[in-house]
Image (cartoon, rainbow, N blue to C red; front, side, top):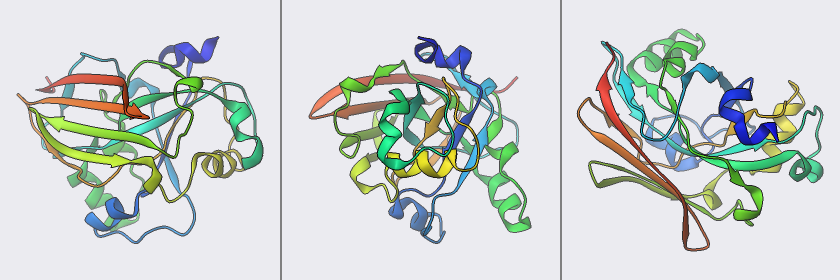
Length: 219
C-alpha cells in the first residue's frame, strides 16, 4: 500500500488554515466561514528524530496538527463518501516563518516561502485509520523542553475532515499518499536553536504517536 509510505510517495501536502477558532483569534485573524488551504512541498518532510532547521532571519513557530493520509485518487468527493478515500492518519508539525508570513499577508502575497522551507513539515509514522475511530476526538499536544505549549482536541475544529476532503477535492484531485493537515489548536509560538520539540497524538485516552525533534540553525 503506497499510502503507508506517504513520505516518499506523496505528491502534495494540503494544509488547512485557521481551522481552530481560538488559533485564528490568537493571531488576530478572522474565523473563516468556509475552508481555505495552502500547499507545502513534500521536500519539507522530516522524520521523527531529525532536526528542525531555523533559517537565518526567521522567527519560526510550531503548529501541531492531525494529518489525513489519502488512500486512493479522487476528485469531487462528497463528504458522505470521504472515509472511503482515507488510508490513515499521522501526527505532524506545520512549521512557519511567522515574520515572513506576516509580511506577505500584508502584501496579499502567497505563504509558500514562509511555510515551505526544508524541514518545515516534521511528520510521524503512518497510523491506520482503525486506530482512530473518532477523528472528532483526537488529543494534540506539544512541548518545548518539557513545557506544554499546545494542548487541544480536534472536537474544536471548525470544519471536520469529511468537509475538508469534499472542499479540497472540488478544486484539485487528491492522490494516494497526499496528506491533508487539518489545522492547529491555540498556543502556537516560537522555537529556537538548542531547544527540543516533542508532540503527541492521543485517542480515547491512549497515546498513539509521539515525536521528538531537536532544533538547530540552518547551515
